[in-house]
Image (cartoon, rainbow over all chains, first blue to last red):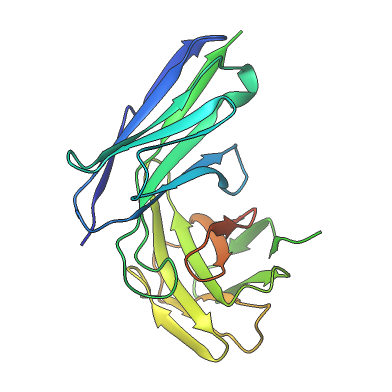
Length: 115
Length: 111
């Protein structure tokens, strides 16, 4: 089955710097890659997602890039702010099924943005 | 205001006791899911349901049970057979393979 590795496990940056979180996946058939932000004691919130027919997607300060050949995808946050501090999860979903029962999550990256 | 509501936010279980976690959604999603989250680990799928009156085991179903009698509701029971129940439990829903949305979670602890 699919396996997702996420790095780094913790990331500390200064406010205004950029942050990059990387994930690799094992199943070359995976075609959907969401990113979630989870604040302490809350459920994960979908912040951006990408499907395998595109290589990059942007939403204001957040962008995701996908390299299908190398089987890795990355989250880029520019001009970081203290409110960006949270745990970020990547995930990958192979095709098959009518829902997300095959979605596999990475182990998370704790991002700390210092003022 | 559409969303997924989980209750209670905190729950304590005594040894040998079954407890039930509630999950309700008003997004009109057909599919619903239960995940378990342990510190330092990714989310692991316990059970999922794609339609009413049907559900399937996920990766870690042992010691858990679910029901899906209504489209809006997908309660999870943590049975006494689950020997390590302390975790953060997350309910989610989706419309097919569009996007997966999560509730706010229930923290279950053992007394």
